[in-house]
Image (cartoon, rainbow, N blue to C red; front, side):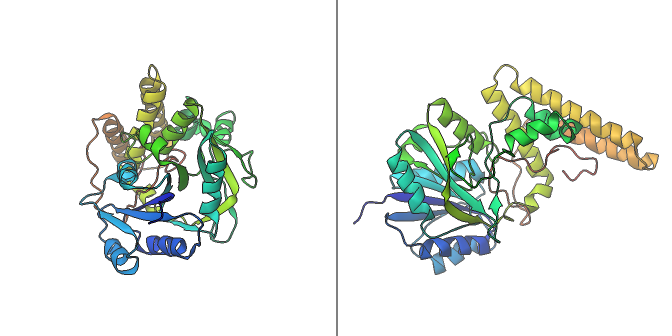
Length: 340
């Protein structure tokens, strides 16, 4: 039996049609490198697991009894994989012919690189700008308060989003698209994989930062292209529990990488954001009774943000948390409507 060169780990959670399209694109992609495909189904209830068993018998399917979220489920797939290389892939990816081979060839030819990711394309073929620079302590202020709406706050947003990069050429980057992310399996496992405390968000940022801290470079390879259809997590962005988890994962990331000041600084930013919302409500046109109710809701959400974490319970089929890194919105956090 030919040794497996590449293990592809895909998470599935109530994304049946996207998962089907992803697996079909992998089946149709001719490759020079022996590969295996592992799907970790995070307790989908839309028939995804049954579809995979019926239509893609070559796939190694693991069905979890509960949604283990992004970091833990990816680590689960990595531990079950047998390939020399590991590709973590979102279910809303469709690979173009030869893309994965180009990623494999790049890592094989460049042992000083720790990871490589392809160019992401929209369904119409236009480029998705998805690479980022690592966040600084200024970024939470720009993300979560009015300061991000004008300079210098808007400059920090543009800096992190690499607005100066057109994503048309290959280059080294801090953090490439995590929707399709390839590295050596043994290195991933030796680093502990994704930090599972960063269960849904910022786990990819953390992994890339740890790679760079080890002296390992990361490449954005424009010559390798995949379609990123999106939509797998957009509805989740309106879910209050997901926004809350983003805030907690962000705080954990900054506490980890800025151990002395990270947590108190993020709590200060949260207080600034809450104060801004309360002021906007007070100065707004609402009747006083509605304004007071909205203010109580903001205060309740602020208390929830700093309370000990609890299991969010992903039971709603309209919430589809799948991938980490980017905020649900620039001003993620408590909302005056109570639907953050």
